[in-house]
Structure formats: structure tokens, C-alpha cells
Image 1 (cartoon, rainbow, N blue to C red):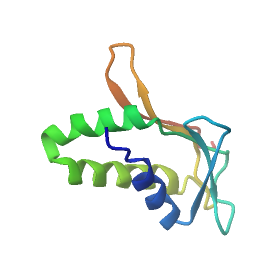
Image 2 (cartoon, helix red, strand yellow; image 1 turned 120 degrees about the vertical axis):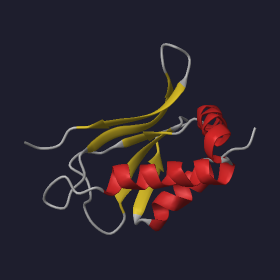
Image 3 (cartoon, helix red, strand yellow; image 1 turned 90 degrees about the vertical axis):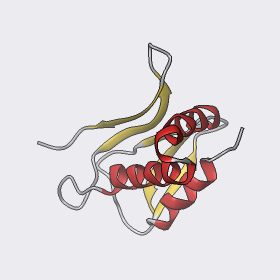
Image 4 (cartoon, helix red, strand yellow; image 1 turned 60 degrees about the vertical axis):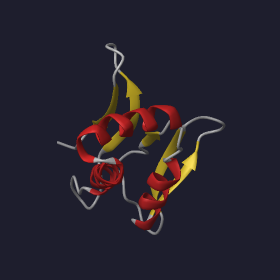
Length: 113
């Protein structure tokens, strides 16, 4: 199994984001490097095996380089969209297994009123 987590982390770091790992988990608190970027402290869930499974499934349609590129683009968009006052309202995102057994890229946001 190829571990694509470094690709995702490096892409986000290029966007002036810092990922602080939460203990020995697959979860990372995301922060702005040079400024306050978020309404909340979003948590990125990045388990290697679920990310690989998600990308393998996507690569059936797009090919692996494109699947990885699209995933990085979505992560950047989800974490850099301005939801007001220059801040992002993402609370959580990442990869998880659904009740049906599929892996999904999930996004939770709570934009201000």
C-alpha cells in the first residue's frame, strides 16, 4: 500500500497551513501559519489505509495522478474558502468508512449566520 498522506500534508503546507498531529492518531489540527484562518480548529482525519482505498477507487475513473490531484484540490478548497471575515468555517474533514463499507471524503462546516 502506498502512503499518500505526505502528498496531502505537503500540498496543504504550501497553502500556508500548519498540521499539528493529535498524539499518535491519524488526526491533525489545521491552523494558519501566518494568520488566523479559521472560525474553529478544524480536524483533518487522514488514515493511510482509507486514503489509499479512496484514491484507488477514484483512480478507476481518473487515473492515480489525477485522483490524487483532485483530492488535494478539494482539501485545499475546503480549508481555504472564505466563509466570512476572511475565515474558514470547516470543523472537520478527511476520510472515513460509511455504513455501507465505502470510503468517503467527508466535510463538516459550520458557517456563521
